[in-house]
Length: 411
Image (cartoon, rainbow, N blue to C red; front, side, top):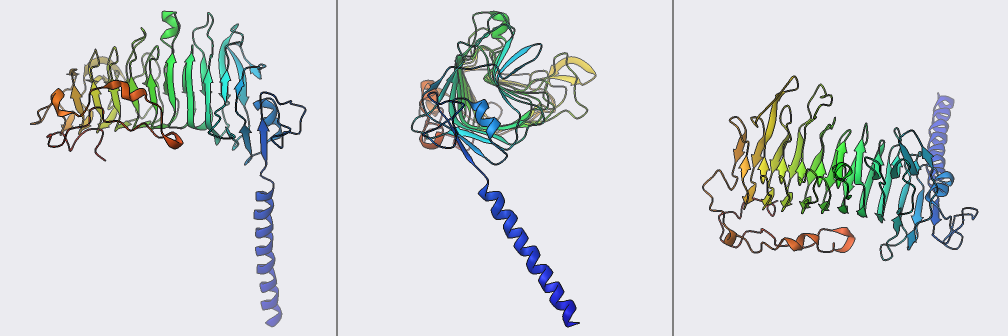
């Protein structure tokens, strides 16, 4: 009996030692890599003094769990990593669980794609289908061209990726474009001045597009884009929009702040997803602020949002009868609670839609003097430390207003 006990004890001790060895060994082999515009892809890439030049060389060297540090300055010398019949993929990400981040937030890197050829559509960054857990932190993307193509993208996500403090600006492309089975998260990201001089291609320059599986957008901003700020037409998954702002979409495209739902002539999934739009702001868009976009079912739960001065409607809850009946009807299945609308109409709210404690349907008195400020220029102010949204008081109810318990500023 004693021999059995000793053997069992020895086995447990050995198993524990193997566990510690594996855990320590895995941790020890997570590596850091570095790139710089002045680097060289023949360098070791393991230090700031001998960095690689390109992201693709760093990806080649990296393994799951590694981090690629992007040193400051402007990157504008690119090859084409991959291509197909439609696209030039300037950077194509084929490995999972790698982080690509600024070396320091005090010197934010900029990727300028203005010299990339446009014989095909351009995807500046392509996260390939099946790739998971890619993380991008704190850099900027600009200059993505379109040429005579129908559309281009700063980020084309067909796998799974998270974006934190990434900015897409001054480009002729969609900003963040999740498609097919693409999924992930955008946190504290901005997309602005994305538009083209061509009306057809301008209708394909959204700030944020969720057209695949589920995506969460938190503390993101879109403004001055050619099409919509946030768009999730043809989405197969339920998307979340939380503390996001969309304003000044007036460049000739659809020009909605939040276009939530709809399938056009596309295939409707067996289960129509219900999205979440909460604590968001839509201002001065040429079409609708918040739009259900012909959803063949409930588009979203809309809570604690603020809409101001949108030329079409502040809230437009237009639905379709069902996935098999494309007749447009006033929304009968939406859920709206604690929303505020000022200087714009609320339309297509049909019988059956639940509307609770919203400024237009209750005993609220909603007027300009109910708010501390109507200065929408606050919305494009610089972000704060660690990428937090700027501190604003736009459409914040004044002390004593009967609106103080609804809207964006209420947790």
